[in-house]
Length: 377
Ligand SMILES: *Cc1c(COP(=O)(O)O)cnc(C)c1O
Image (cartoon, rainbow, N blue to C red; front, side):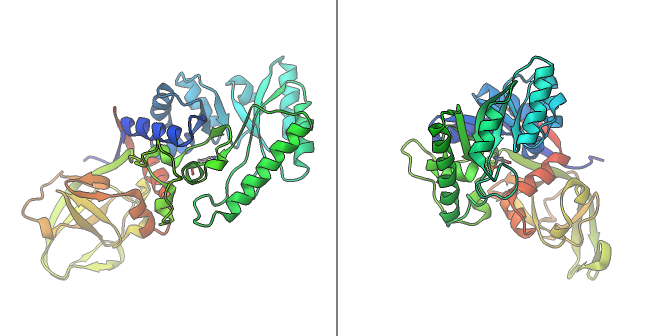
C-alpha cells in the first residue's frame, strides 16, 4: 500500500515568486525565510534554489535548522531568528538575532574567547509584543555595539498585523522604527541594514522595505491577503505583476474502493450515514499526516478532475470520501489531490485553512512537513 501523502514541490514556482518579491521590494536585499522546513516545502532543496536565484540571506528559527542547511553544503549567510546559542552560532558561522544585552554579552564573551567576530542582527519590539528590545532601545543598542567580538550587521523589527486592511498600527510600527534609525544615526551609530517587512508588508507597505525584506509565505506562492480575505491590492509599482504561483501540490492515492448499501455508517462515531447505495473510497492520509480532524465531513478532494467530499471522521492514517458521483470512471489507486489542480478544479491551501478556521501557514507547515517530497524544476 502506498502510505501517506506526497508533496510535489515546483521549484520553478519558488524561483518565480522570489523574482516577484525582489521586484516588489525594488531590489532590496532578500532575507528568504525558510523556517519550519521552508513552510513544509523542504528547506534544503528550497534553499538551494533560492540561493541559485540570488537570495542574499536565508533565515531559520533555530540553530538545529541552520545546522541541517550547513551540513547540506549551504554557505550563504544564515540568520537564526530565535536561538542565539553561542556554541552553534560560532561552529556553524550563523548570524543570531539578539533581543537583549545579556545575550549579546554572553556571545561577546564566547567570541572573544575564540578570537572570532560574530555578526548579529538586533531585534527591537515596535509593537509585535513577542521578542526584541523594548526599553531604552538606542541605549541598549549602543551598549551592544561597544561589545567586543560582535558586529551589528542589521537591526530588525516585526509586524503584528501587516496583513490587516487597516494599516494604522503598521504605520505606527514603521514610525517607531524610523525614529530609532534617526536616533541611532544622531549618536553616530550607522548600521548597515534595517529590515522589518514580511510578505504582507512587502506587498502592501513599500515604506516598510528599508534596506532588506524578509519574505516567507509569498516565496511559497501564497498571498497573506488570501487568508484575511482582504481586498488589499498590492502597492502600485510599474514593474509588478502580482502573480504568485503556489509551489506545493499535495497528493495521495485511493487505496480501497467499496460499494456499500443505503444506511451504512462511515468511520468513527457514525457521523456520516449513506443516503443511497454509495461508492466509498478510502484514501491514505489522516490526521497523523497533518490532515486534521476538523476536515471530517468538511473538506473536498479532487479525483478524476471532480470535487469529492470527505465523509465521516478523518482517522489517524486514513480518510473516507464519497465517490458515488463518479463511480463509473474511478479506479483503485487513482490519484487524489488534497491541495493543487486537477483538470479544471483547484483546491488551494486557503480553502482548507478556512474550513479549519486557521491560516494557510498552518496548513502548509502541518501537511507539508509530514509528506514525502518530490521536486520538479
Ligand atoms: C516568519 C517570519 C517572517 C516571514 O513572514 P511571512 O508572513 O511568511 O512573509 C519574517 N520575519 C520574521 C521575524 C518571521 O518570524
